[in-house]
Each structure stands twice: as C-alpha cells, then as structure tokens.
Image (cartoon, rainbow, N blue to C red; front, side, top):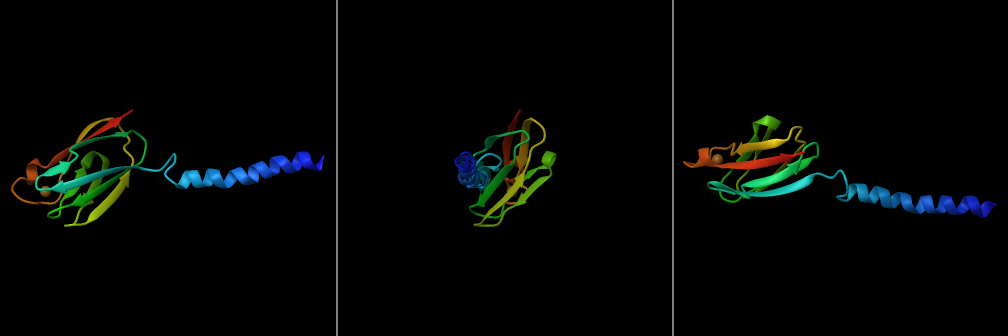
Length: 121
Ligand SMILES: [Cu+2]
C-alpha cells in the first residue's frame, strides 16, 4: 500500500524540474530571435517572418554607424549604436506585411533603408 503512493509521488518529483527547465531554456513561450545586421544602407536580411501573438526579439548589430529599426504600427523603435548589438522584444498583435525603416539618420541613403516584417496568423 505504501509503495502505491510512493511511486507516483517519486515520478512527479522527478518530472517537475524537467518541465520547469524546458520553459526557461528556449522552449515554448520564449521569444523568437531575429538577428539583423545593419550597414549603409541595408538591413541583412531585408525581410523576415514572425507569428501573430508570439513574442519576437529583434537583435540589431550596427556594423558601420548607428542605425535603428522602427515599426510604427507596433510602437517599436530600437536605437542602435555603432559597432554594438542592441535588442528589443515585442509581440505583434496583427497579421500582415509591415515596412520598417532605419530610425537613425545615417547618410544620404537613409531614407531608402527599409526592411519588411511578415506577420502570419
Ligand atoms: Cu539610417
């Protein structure tokens, strides 16, 4: 009788830490990381795809001068710094294609420095 109670308790005790570890080690719920390099006057890649309602982290590395990424529809404005990597996390609430732009004046091609985010259902 004691063994019948002890075995399920032991199984639960051993399984619980595994579930917790998965949740905090990039499992379900962790933001999707999108790595973007910026240099005059391009973003690499120039487009990427994310899912509506799921958190996204944009990781921006500015190779030459300070750039930035702005998606006005999502109130996102990530300010970069020369030679550094900066990031911002947000959750896109609507699906569609959105054009972002460099948010830090970086020279004569600045106005054409854009990237597209595809948000799927
Ligand atoms: Cu710019």
